[in-house]
Length: 381
Image 1 (cartoon, rainbow, N blue to C red):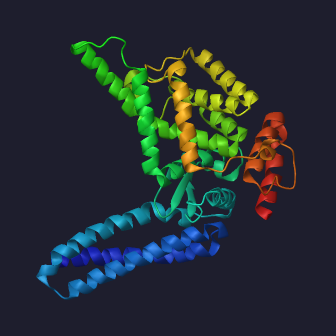
Image 2 (cartoon, one colour):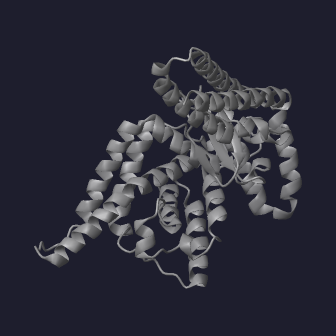
Image 3 (cartoon, rainbow, N blue to C red):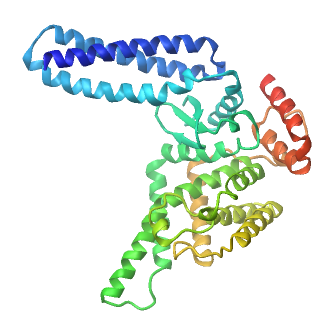
């Protein structure tokens, strides 16, 4: 065991020192917007180095009674290094100048909330998602989306997941309240005590349980709209509406195992929120586009009992409002979505994203050239 632990810790020490060297090299050319994240990751790497050196020091004592503790610490150290080497270090080692756009948006986004403002953010390549690796956060973003404006509003949805985590006990309580409301709305009119009734009860419990994760996604969509306005609705809709039948309808078995609501449900909730906030044109556009695709696919609204607009929508929206009150995300200002170019257009990410979508919708052929100039202006501020 002594020799085995010595081998593993020697190997770990070598890899940690190698990673320290790589981080220092990459830091030289990394965008300034990544500095806070780099500082955090280098600190974690230094901590791992101290731990492995301590293990090696204890092993030099050749005390049999220490081996069990050293084994336990080596296991923990190995897992921590795998996380650092496999996920956390990647945004630094892959960093390039084009990251500045996304990183500047994320800096601004985190700064809008008192509990998020000191959490360093980074980006990595991948489908839109977020890794809550506290005390830092990594936003996965498709490669081309990192370099343009149209899809950046989706960051606001991912930011919603961070807000949920920062308020998790209170948010879980609100979701549990929603689950109880939903269960009440699918309770049978006649109570029976037979095998069929027990089967129905199991199915109702499945629907209720599914809404625990679904509610979180709907909350993040709501965060996206109240923070970013119409540009979030347009970006979210276009990104998902042509991804096939599963965005519109799933089988009962698929619904049972899904972590996200059918996207068509989310669009209905998003359109309802837009309309309630006075953006009927946006709501109509969402509904029209999704209905057009659904018709082309031959899909009708059938969500297998997991969602009923007449019964579920009011209570869901009310509970989402409560969740927004609890987390207090920054709400967009009317001037930021008016699509009028002002001095603040390039200093406010929300104004810039809404202007970008207006330009794209009105003049798609001229959009690319406008976007290039807009990004330069934004980064120069």
